[in-house]
Image (cartoon, rainbow, N blue to C red; front, top):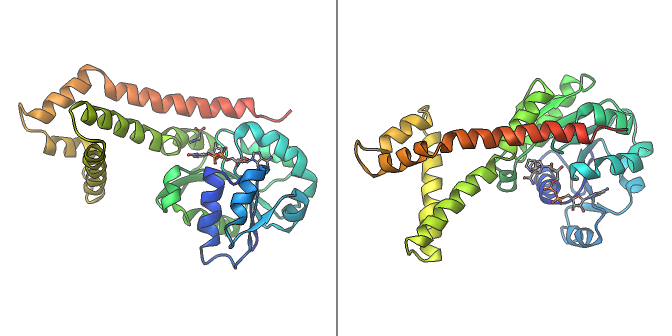
Amino acid sequence: MKVLVIGGGNMGLTYAEAIANSKFLKDKDLMILDNSKEKTEELRKRSHFAVFEKLEDCVPAADVIFIAVKPYHANALMETMKDLTSEGQIFISLMAGVTIAAIQEGLNRKKVVRAMPNLPAQVGKGLTSFTASDEVSRLELSTIENLLDTTGRSVRLDTENDIDASTGISGSGPAYIFYFMQSMLEAALKMGFSKHDSRVLVEQTFAGAVELFSSSDLDPEAWMNRVASKGGTTRAALDSMDDNNVKEMIKEAAYAAFNRAVELGKEYQNG
Ligand SMILES: NC(=O)C1=CN([C@@H]2O[C@H](COP(=O)(O)OP(=O)(O)OC[C@H]3O[C@@H](n4cnc5c(N)ncnc54)[C@H](O)[C@@H]3O)[C@@H](O)[C@H]2O)C=CC1
Ligand SMILES: O=C(O)[C@@H]1CCC=N1
């Protein structure tokens, strides 16, 4: 099997690395192309990739093609590559919002998988949600799942609306966690801790909390109650968050990402 990744940025490169290092591909069966000269130079330093500069030199040879460019580059890319594609190829889009129908129309091909990864894929802890057009067979789906799982875990969802929704939770979600971390870092600095100590306090607190959460079936609310003593410090913090409606604001933020994914889909429809 030959896999081509188009777009060697955060996501494309992460997937390329994970797949190239997996047992599913032979050396150099991972092809990659980026239209930035600088990026191409960088990619050439990774000896386990076959790096290409022209679509015509790699698209026809690929069995599976990952599209990892920004949504606003999708139409221009599809226009230039569509005549180089062939019927059996499977296209996996990592682009937020862009619909399966838009890709089918843009490439004039039927086998399309729409996937929504997240950045922890860079450390093998990614979560990729995906759904596929009817033309992708069960056997092909299991191959795709294997490829997606090289970056962490994957979840197959029924509809594209589910993919947009998962964008608001897992796709964009790491940024919400970093937002929370940044807020705690700023509080620690304000309390007078050094940069180094602030980072250690925050990092270990997040890592420990996540590990605790994963260690049992307890929900976060139950864990919160284990930290908070009646009339104690944690209750003071949680009450302050409740008074400021923080929970509702976080939910609203997740919906903002979900809605933006739906909007992106409308913006980048073909035609
Ligand atoms: N960064 C993230 O956390 C996530 C990103 N995504 C999706 O992944 C896609 C890529 O995002 P990033 O990797 O963050 O962007 P990025 O900007 O880091 O990478 C995109 C790459 O595509 C290249 N490119 C643009 N047009 C091209 C073309 N016509 N041919 C070849 N290469 C081309 C650019 O030079 C760039 O290196 C986006 O569509 C985004 O919605 C999805 C989930 C998470
Ligand atoms: O912000 C974005 O549009 C992409 C999709 C999910 C994470 N990053």
